[in-house]
Image (cartoon, rainbow, N blue to C red; front, side):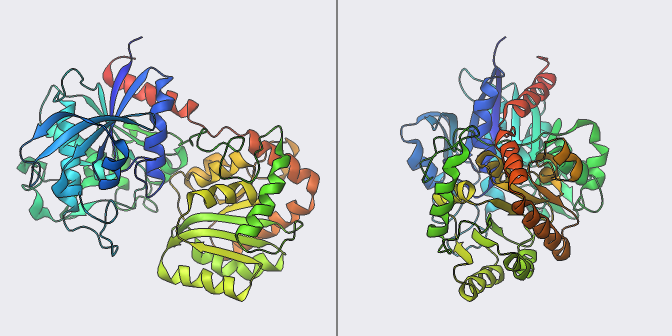
Amino acid sequence: MNALRVLSVASECFPLVKTGGLADVVGALPAALAAESVAVRTLVPGYPGVIAKVGKADPLHAFDDLFGGPARILAAHAAGLDLLVLDAPHLYARAGGPYSDPQGRDWADNPQRFAALCWAAAEIGRGALPGWRPDVVHAHDWQAGLVPAYLHYGGRPRPGTVFTVHNLAFQGQCDASLLAALRLPPEAWGLDGVEYYGAIGTLKAGLRLSDRITTVSPTYAREIATPAEGMGLDGLLRARAGVLHGILNGIDEVAWNPAADPHLAASFDAEHPEGREANRSALRARMGLEDAPEALVIGVVTRLTGQKGMDLLLEALPVLLGHGMRLALLGAGEPGLEAGFLAAAAAHPGRIGVQIGYDEALAHLIQGGCDALLVPSRFEPCGLTQLCALRYGALPVVARVGGLADTVIDANEAALAMKVATGLQFAPTTAPVLESALARLAALWQDRATWAATQANALHAPVGWARSAARYAAVYRELSGAG
């Protein structure tokens, strides 16, 4: 079987550039798809950090004027990825993050910056690169939402298009006056095009004009087709239900491998879990927690936002501490929540440890050293942190939403009797229900035999990409006629 050629288009890709789970997915999926005879090339913007990390690169195509200046498509290999980098200094060569300046303000020209990425992807889709033309173009989230639009309005022949929505909350809207500046034809303005409540909606464009839509868990695919969770797009998603697929994310089992993780104090695996004790001790020391091995440590690695339910955790802290639990939290986000957790840590030294920011090594140590990982999200398209927790033997305690509902088996009586439980689920996402989940967790911790059995289930749970990669490959092949 000849390898199917897929162009993946995204604004970030681990380990080159990362602000969230999108980067992890874009970085991990190509290796998993290789086992399905799918060859992926990944197109990313040439941010300064990306240009520095890819090193030697070969120019394959040039644009005289790509939304305000010259640009090139460079080919490179880095971190096991076959990369195409859009080198456009006028759009990307600046200090700050991928989407915002050093002060955290969105770049005013973000519409043009990511339209350029989409335009380049569409040109590649039509054969701009010598000797390589994709069978399918796979665009990710609002930053790549105009890829299906440019290919749709550019006429045929064109490759098939897949659009993945990683989080419906981020919709990439911009002013309607930019229609021509973004090289969209007049006929694109309308309900069946890019128009979205009087603005240009780039996420909406991807959902409306792609050949296939995927999202990152089966439950989230159902949720976003409802008025309660559809964020104004539920009608469109119901109308396109026949091409919408919920495909669960996985994690990179090489990057997240407790048997060979340089960030851990001791290695371990499902057959030899005793190494976790050294990591529990190291985590307590790292986070300034009392050296009390009998106390259950709850870990949190997250953005500190309302979506992630962090305000509910703040409210539930007295109950958590009342059960004798400890908290190790790593995250950054809303200033009020950051201040709230720092104040709680100051008020309860040795019982609450908080680090504001992101630290990859500490994230791994929290997974390997905490006893339970808390994810009280109000909505969660998939979530990756609970998959890492399973891999590292930390019992996930999760809200029953989105991918959290799809990846954690609740330790209810039936699941315990059948010996399949891997963590705890709770619903709805409110402070009283979260407090009840903490009480259930405390009771499970006291039953050491049941805890150990549940932890063993977690360590053996499938969290990789194999099954989902096969589903993506099936979508690609159906779309390309190679099925």
